[in-house]
Length: 180
Length: 167
Image 1: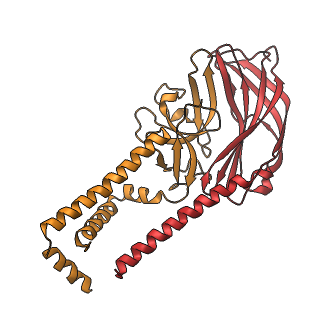
Image 2 (image 1 turned 90 degrees about the vertical axis):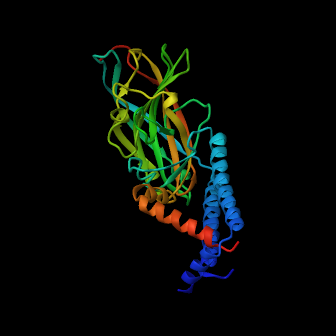
Image 3 (image 1 turned 120 degrees about the vertical axis):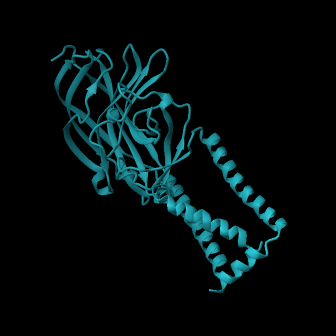
């Protein structure tokens, strides 16, 4: 238990220069994470290059807590692709499979219908009032790869925010009391 | 430098890096597999063919679908999602793809199969251009791995026709 005594001692002996240095290092870490995130957004062409699966509508393929890597290219949307889309008025994006495509002769625009693999019916119930099809502007990206279980961290932090605060508090304490 | 915190940190970082590397290698090993799937679809019967009250054509048909997709499975495969889509062109739309039936194949043993079924999803056109229409039936598959990159491909079967008149 002597590390508690050490911690209290080190908080008492903080010099202002050391504190500023550590503040700058923390800022550097946060901004490099932000740079990587924004770079990923540019490379994949999608507003959110990584999403966490929140529902069981795509089981057994994607379970709650898996993460999906998205990519959006100019290629036309075709049946069978797993797309992530936003419905007007809902903030949480939905990850389902395209089951119907109708592409116009003249403009090349598409009407798309989606359905979750594990759902009995298609997604018309989820679309906005009076909307029967999705268009390209609703679609944020195609799922091209996935990692299992990694997304549970995000789900736990969203559903039990107390854990988020504990984690940030512990990290802050670690940064302040480290001797680097 | 040798405190519990530092050791735990080093251990965690190392194990996460190794795990990520293993996932990447598992995904890359899928590229070594060269699949050779085969499939055949026969339309046994056009059950009915009507124009709906909203003005769209709708067809109900019964198909025999047989396929051998065992070569798609690797040790890193969790499941293969397959679906049969009718693909055709109309004056209004350069491409229409309507999924008629789909299934999930959870394991290699189930990948060689034969099924007699009517269309699971409604075959509805945007409009009423389906009379006498020639269309392709395409069997698409989507290989979903235990970890990593997903693969998709298809077999196109041509030469199917809808009747000239409603029935």
